Image (cartoon, rainbow, N blue to C red):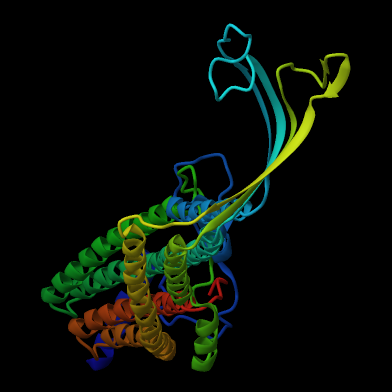
Length: 463
């Protein structure tokens, strides 16, 4: 009698297999090297007639840097700061100008000028003027401009590293969403196949109708999960497209390197790179240096300033190189030089107030520098522990996903042989879906942890 039941189950299983035409393989083959570059196929694109753009992570980073408005704004601020430095430097150098002036004043009865400030009734000035001002405040202002330029460059690097993290997260979220969609398709197909199996076994009187109900509930749940996976992939692709394309486009595909092996640097290497190139500490250091320059510039208000002027040209009653004085020809060309010393005496304490104000800002900048240094030490330990944990867990997640696939296949075979219940099959299906999803999320977590470590160092390569 037992042999007849077994034969009946085998016949039912054969019929279901013929109807479904295929049986998915759940134990994923992970023996091949994960470094093999597979292409993640793109979702249906609104753009038709054009081949999709294939993007690596480095391509996405390059496009993101070109098209990110906040990052370009930081670069613009750095470029403006460089021009401020050039202007402050040029203010220290001599200037050359060519002045041309014609002055007419009312004459007296004797033919002379009526105003005592005028040299003649008609006076023409055409002179080249060389001016040099020696002002310590200008020198200190130039040094301050250099510190401000360094601060702007550091802030641009901070913006660049923040952009790297954002794009890495969006890029690998898209890759993981594609993998999750494939898993959802497999589990949906298995749900349909298992529903047909229970219906066939119920027809043969081998299982109760409760098994069919449970299988149908599971199949409907898998259909909903498939729709949610499709929606998640669409949203992930749209988020990435907004970051990397100047004109919106979803006609692209990404290289499936989510599970490519990426070694984790040692903690010592991270600490050395961060000590040299951490942008937050560099920005805080540049801000402290700029605040120190502000104090020196404010103190320069107590010091005298010296300026020199040299002029060569015409300052005569005729606009001509020569003039006649009686019967003698006299040259109108001549030169003059002057030096001015400006000694500050009293300004109602304005200079003292500026110095006090600059000292307060310097003290605050030093506090912020100390905080940035302490924060860096804490971030190194925290982010490295995050990356190390994600790296160590990734192998376990990979193995768990493989075991879940084997378990689902074996549990389904045991159910066909009458050795397991429908609840065990459903549980195996849920475990398969959960472990594979956790494996994809674990890979994204590790990639994002590496990108976060890059915010602490000067290395900006794609992880």
